[in-house]
Length: 322
Image 1: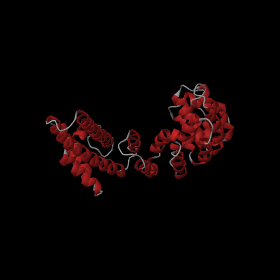
Image 2 (image 1 turned 180 degrees about the horizontal axis):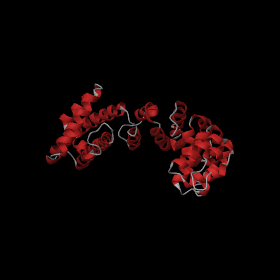
Image 3 (image 1 turned 90 degrees about the vertical axis):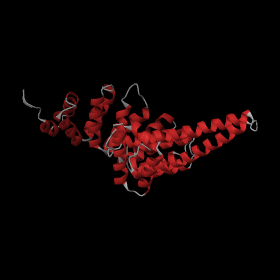
């Protein structure tokens, strides 16, 4: 290493100067020297694990440094799994940057799956949830299968649904099946749908439009019944209790429809194919227009995505200028 020149990373790696490399990584976590130190630590392997895991304690409030340590540990791979799992099992947020322990295990991926599955069987529910969250970072069928099994535990259901939403398209079918097993339009059902809508896939768009159509029919039926009951109430043919209950049903049906439209508008506005990004309010208006909704729904049903996005972009652009 020259006195005024850049550090000789290769020499430090050959001599396995892990502490000096960790020091360089900490001081240069946002430049090429830091990246080279991370790569070198990854190649040194097992001897570098201890000083790297120490970072999650010594620098637990420094996100950049912890992320660099997580990256280096992920390059070491399988030998780092057990030390990281040991930290996870302590469940000590005061002492460690647990978030980056999870990230490191998630980046290591498949070699960590078995130990994380074991962790779901831990007696501590907090540890179970951490292992579930970490499995969600691993986009692998075995991780998804483990999460599907965890759905059977009611206490872990919400955390598992969140984890499945991180797995992307690989976890879509599990979430869809779970959605279909729950009473439609219940709070629990909406929670699953909202997490399903974190997955970028055309099947999600089709699912959202399908349920909007159902909610529209329910809303229209509720409006029709409300009119009938209101007339009956005015004539004295319907008692106050029935009148109030019908009004509540109408509000509920209308609330479900609005909620679905909001989820869908947000989803479409965040898609990279949307030419007017982040215009969820404009898209929301389109979904409330029956002609626009029917055109979009039909295009999605036919898998004609070119027509879908061209029409949506044109109408959104048109709405922006009005």
